[in-house]
Amino acid sequence: MKTPEFFAYEAYKQQRTTPQWLAHLRKLLTFPARFALGWKFRRRCLRGMGVRIGESYVGRDCMFDEEAPELIRIGNQVTISSRVTIATHDVWRGVGAEVWIEDKAFIGIGALLLPGVVIGERSVVAAGAVVTKPVEPGVIVGGSPARIIRRLTEEEAHR
Image 1 (cartoon, helix red, strand yellow):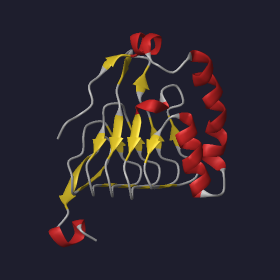
Image 2: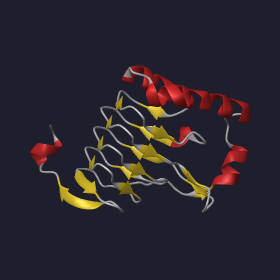
Image 3: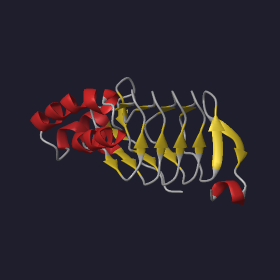
C-alpha cells in the first residue's frame, strides 16, 4: 500500500498553487461544511474548500483541516460519521502530509485521522479511534492509537 510522504509544512505553504487570498476565502465554507442540514450540500462545500471527495456521505460537525484541505482525498461510497476530525498538518512538529480515505471505507463517530494516514478500501475505523498510521484494506481498527481489531471476512468485505 502506497502512503503519503511527510513534508515541511511551512515550505509547502510558500509553494502551493492556491493563492493565499483564496486559501483564506475558502475558510468561509468551513461553517456550512460542518453544520448544513443536507449532506450533499456539505459535500459540495467541502469540494469548494478544496477537499477531493467522490460520491460519499459526510456527517454533521466534521472538522476537515481548513489550512490545507487540498491534501484530503476521499474516494467513492465512503461513510464519514459525525464529529470526525481530519488533520493534514502538525504545526508543533512542522510537518504535513496527505490523508487518503479509499473507496467504501467507514469512519466511526468522533474518529481522529492524523497526517499521512491512508484508510484502505472497505476498512472500518471504530468510533473514537485515533488513527496515526496507515490502515490496510479490509480491517477493523479501533483505540488510541488505532490498532487492528480484526480482519473482515471475504463476505463482510463485499457487502
